[in-house]
Image 1 (cartoon, rainbow, N blue to C red):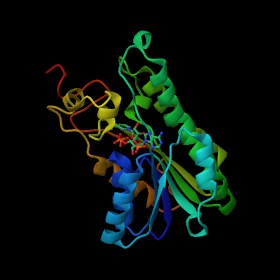
Image 2 (image 1 turned 90 degrees about the vertical axis):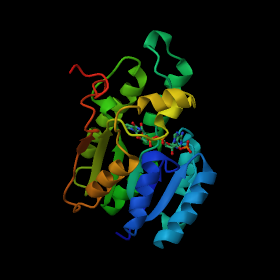
Image 3 (image 1 turned 180 degrees about the horizontal axis):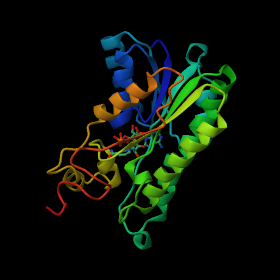
Image 4 (image 1 turned 180 degrees about the vertical axis):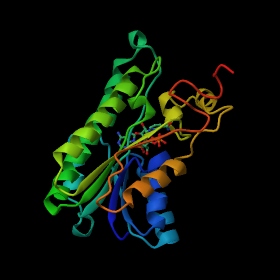
Length: 255
Ligand code: NAP
């Protein structure tokens, strides 16, 4: 496409898979996340493999000042961002609300809602000015329906869904597309993060079921962004075939 994309949360999972498919298709990419060493590795792999330019940025999206400072002061040849993938996000814990940890709630709200807003605030005004751009926000099936212990995570993803709708209204007439991607279960580091690096618990989530792969979501995102600019795919709910709702899947359905 010969365009510049910014992907937040590119050090793992869906964000990393997006970086690969975008690079395959000739896009230059700003890859952002907190784990800088992973970004450096990804840069050297993608640049060698696909002859594209990659700019790694160590960024914590919850740090408002750092987000604005780094994204408003990009080198000139990186400042014309055409595609923003608001992907950085996490869930922490699966406790019922009455047992929940306030610091986990704050981290999810700060990352999934406020972080997405800070990054958007740094990028969107330029898109409006040039009358062109595409924003992809990573929501989830958890934004459509909740489950026991999902409380605050589900609330943040419902907020992302609403923000996508609101953005579409606010940029109407500015030739900007806002796309929501709402996956079901995808096997990434998501569950390791949710369960504080407890591998046994994380592996259990994906046991006896065929979850989505990060590449499945990346392909859908590339499909949506490579549609003609007059076409907005507003919302894609993408589920594993073995999962029918947030809670109902091949492991627990009533045969
Ligand atoms: P993942 O493998 O854990 O990747 C999450 C990414 O977000 C990592 O690159 C992480 O990088 C980054 N991140 C987290 N906090 C950050 C922060 N404060 N600042 C910058 N980057 C941050 O999980 P994933 O499944 O690919 O998740 C990607 C998105 O998809 C999330 O928004 C998630 O809610 C959503 N989603 C996932 C699933 C699923 O089942 N996996 C389903 C629906 C939606 P660093 O740790 O290096 O900063």
